Image (cartoon, rainbow, N blue to C red):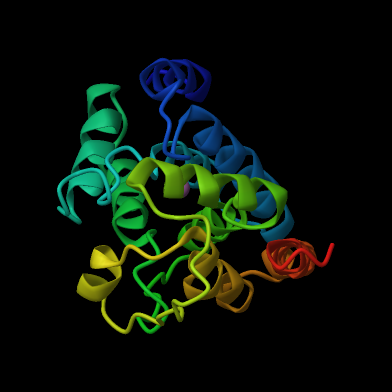
Length: 214
Ligand code: NI
């Protein structure tokens, strides 16, 4: 089948300039981090690289809420390029399970390869890049930066999470600051811990500036 580099070039063309934080460069960062985690954790590089590249192919947030659209698109993408059915299935299974579906909704990611890709995707929501992405996405859906009167909500169902539309700052409490404790692999936990502290420092400063104290 076609190599990873060719497929990556195809995806870059398709997703470049996308403005919601799920553009080609998100895919690129997840791909690179997934390689790092796969090597550190001893996961299968082929499955991991393909799943990382295809994990947002048809994100439910942009596919009219169809949770299986991404898995179908990933499977088709691989089969069209002559991949073996077993690889296409393994990748489609990971893509279907990879999205964060709310604070109270437990993860269901049984394979090490899937855990590596989910960790890599979540790490991209943390740290300096994560902060940039949360405000980019907030701008895309028309959310305010911050609303001091609003309390963050911890969504206990996927349906509830999909309907939310709070401020970008609330999103830190509804998702980003919860991700450190949802990492599967030890390598990702270590990276997440550092990015978590960075975000806490950022938030402290944000609230100080909000009140004119810094
Ligand atoms: Ni993603």
